[in-house]
Length: 239
Image (cartoon, rainbow, N blue to C red; front, side, top):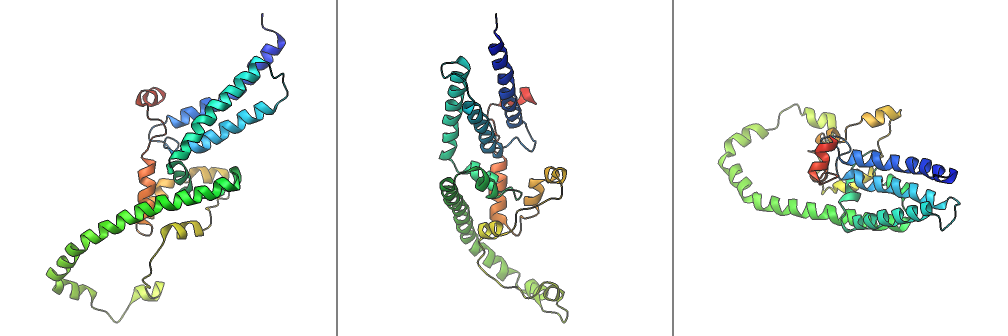
């Protein structure tokens, strides 16, 4: 028969397993806000924190329940360490303008934060170099088109006596823009209530930034298309 201690362990086990179920179901969503790879890192952070608190509670070291908690933590930490092999987990969180690096500053040690920033920079530079190479390949075609439509171009770009654009926004200054620095230099989006923060659509945000931040927008949509769980059978079953 189960002892009173056994019943206490079962009650605590249910409390511990509930967050595991919630995070797992969110990761299995399809076409929803939590179904992408951006869910992985913070989901594991939450679960590891729960297990660490459970480990710290006073109970006999030889108890079966304590052994189970220790083994659970070791297994989850093993998979957590594997996320360090790819920067996509960090970048996908960073590109949520409600968090940026503030999430990592709250939850991670400083030494991890410096490494994360370096990984984000390298990842972003890869995209930027690809786009610059593509732009150079397309340059001759653009020049040829400009020559063939010279008369039309002159008609369109002829200055007028009323320059509304300059009046409204000031003179245009061409500069080499670093989208990542600009994005991180802006304040994290703040909302007056939890409901409004949760209602914010990250995808709509990046759709609206396709022109002013084309490289980061492409990074976001590439990563948002990666499902949090790759086993399609489980995703369909949970859906």
